[in-house]
Amino acid sequence: MASVPRYWRNIPSYYRLVGSKCRGCGRTWFPPRRCCPICYSRDLELIELPTEGVLEEFTIIRTPPSGFDYYTPYVVGIVKLRDGTRVLTQVVDCDVTELKPGTEVVATFRRVREDGDFGIVMYALKFRPKR
Ligand SMILES: [Zn+2]
Image 1 (cartoon, rainbow, N blue to C red):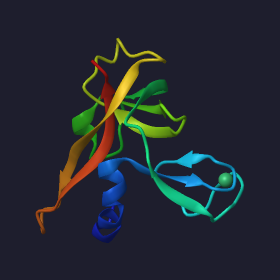
Image 2: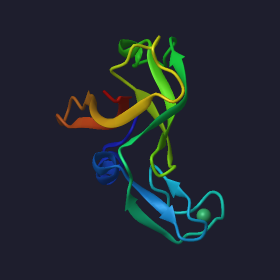
Image 3: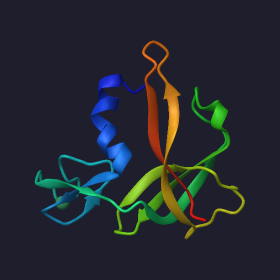
Image 4: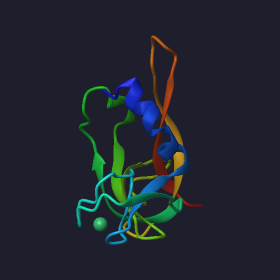
């Protein structure tokens, strides 16, 4: 379960699709990283990422972890954004039989759950086919 403090720290990136760009090797990451996993540089800057891309590959989840039964079946895939950044994400608002590699998708923010004690609504980045 995501803790509330961690969630709040991540809000800017989840709302604006902010990633990080490594000044060492030029690669971009989402969510933002403090250390580049490729060249190990710690010199990364925050950048705003494009919100459109194409679905590179995906899988359909029919046996979800507990607590996610409501969404079954759902699609998890890798989206390659216009600038080349790859994002592991859920794909929503789609007919799973019509999805294919190369499908154009766009970012959308969806409510994932509400914290019962504090009434905090959590949103997460997902993608949907572009129309
Ligand atoms: Zn790097």
